[in-house]
Image 1 (cartoon, helix red, strand yellow):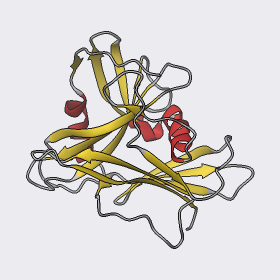
Image 2 (cartoon, one colour):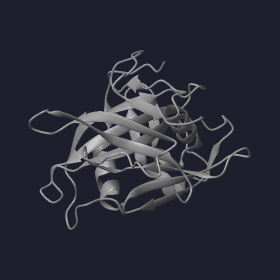
Image 3 (tube, helix red, strand yellow):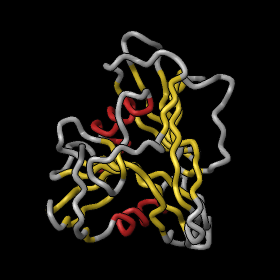
Image 4 (cartoon, helix red, strand yellow):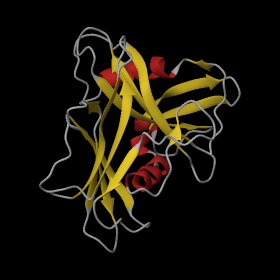
Length: 224
């Protein structure tokens, strides 16, 4: 399980993410930079122990789109990821690990593989800020047979409704892993067609600290 260092990060995660978030097609605000509150999230382990994986929830408190929570999957690497310049959010100085490259994790093959495993209840989510601690508030639900472990993400596409990752496997029809980016606790799991799997988790609202739970991801047959 990952060890969380209690140290400095310059610039901070929210400072890196804010200008990047404003340029995304699923960002609801316009005309001003978002002001972000870190509102929740969780981590996943890289089996090789090399890449940091975090699913961070931030809430925009800028006044435009105020109160909207966003899901930002991040990977942290000790060297640049080849061919992923388009997914680089920025670099930062970690007080223990040194220079780190921070990526939109949906384009990182390590996060892709672990997210597929998590949605199908094959990976254990970890607490965001506490070492060696499972996070049981992150709930995957498998509604049918899991895809084979050799399933891989082949393409990633962003749109107003979030990020869609195309999933291919030799043994099954193609699937799409739909990652919701603008979060809403009222979003319901579709009944028809039912997803093969889905993922829910919680976050806190700024100011009141109220904890809410919502849908984060759906695994559905492509075209479904």
